[in-house]
Image 1 (cartoon, one colour):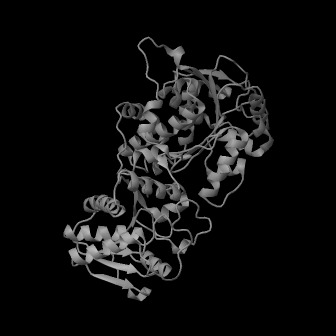
Image 2 (image 1 turned 120 degrees about the horizontal axis):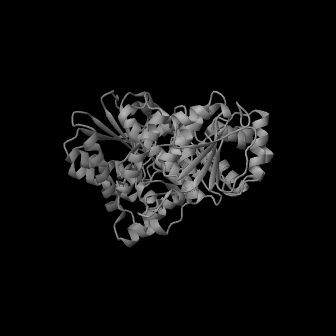
Length: 515
């Protein structure tokens, strides 16, 4: 699924209207029908519904929905936030339909005190502004938004929370943005939904299909993609009956230090559960018995040091390598890490303490092998790339970083972003808050290492690794709940994650995301 900028979505709308062909007001009706279906599933008819409209087409969506809700016996009223008398043509048509075909009360809000008292049992439909908003809300709109945010009502935003920009909100007024409980986005998610600071505005968001032109969607270029099974399924390689373990690669995992051998166990176990043929772990010698007892399927290459990684022998028999989980940042380990980078010419994934070492030695970034995969969480990314003020700026920094160092950056988070050297960005749709737990990143490193060793391109290895890691976490959370989920649960659910992808169990357009 592509993620388009606001102006691109308008162009796709226009193309659909011209070439389906469909009247713009009928496309609005189609959108309102999808809103209605969602609303009927979510709320019962005992609740009062207040529809807040603005003068544009987002307000027109709200008017169409108000009429359809009334026709379905909901107790609904419309409050039009009169910030302008210049209403759109489709708004005017739907206002007339509401007046002629229903008895829905309609009032103009000239000042904030004109708003009715909003109770905790009410549902408010926010249809004031759409994604075309170009400057922060102000005046009457801001006053209404603040009152709405101060209420205890359930708030449902149409397409995008009013006041939120579709992309960069760096210069926006946080007090002039609706804080929705639910956001119903038409056809595509908005780029701003991908950033953590905006989750308090979007709440739980859902994509609703409204039948926009497939041709226009296909032909419109977008650097941002939202990962789903439709994209992931074709990337996985099918196994043949005469395949053997040598076909699926040999990976080297450099991990662990005294007291942190669990990182090596989790990474190697995840690699093995993700289809790698062979995995060898370079570990401090103190971990030999621990590893062999915990994971007999893994081979070991003990370091000469008992407690640290101090020298990493180069060996061309390894098809790919992963380095960083639990290795610490001791000067001897840093020296071994640097030497390893200088002599590494095969696919590589770097995580955890490997990233922390790079953060202390920025000049070493210039010797990263081409297409090296870095998997930082937000703080680790700050250490290697510098601080940013928000998610949008962080994404822009990651795009520049990936291009400048010819590497792939996996920004880990609620919608982990895989950023490629050419500026393509894949946002993940799987995963959950329960995965914010010790060792979760080590399992991702092992999964990505496995795909690299199996011969997947670094880009595909990162994309597959992030998606399957999150999907296994979702399956695990379904069994344990968020609070009880641990990294080992993710590994144990990898098999079911692969099975789900092979069964082509696509995520439906009504899948929920966010809080």
